[in-house]
Amino acid sequence: MGKALYLVIHSQDKWWVDFEGTPHGPFQTREAAALDARNLARVRVDGREAEVLVPDGDGRYWVIWSSRHDQNEGGGFVPRRVGP
Image 1 (spheres, one colour):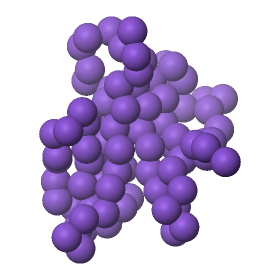
Image 2 (cartoon, helix red, strand yellow):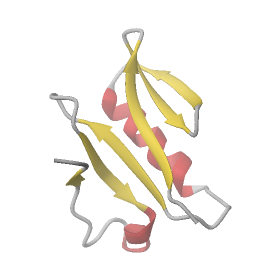
Image 3 (tube, helix red, strand yellow):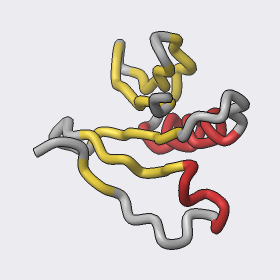
């Protein structure tokens, strides 16, 4: 079973959360979209591991939250960049 990925994207001068092609938003800031993405991911009920990915200033995506580490309110989780 694949991971459930919540992507924060910038489009039409707003921030959005994309989950499997369904947009959520818009949001005024990247941070607001990231918090909403985490909240959406936390209420998943299909049993898949979930991750929230947010772009940095250069457009490179970082995993900033993972359901695998959420039991400890993020304790032990270190954000990591996706790709090279």
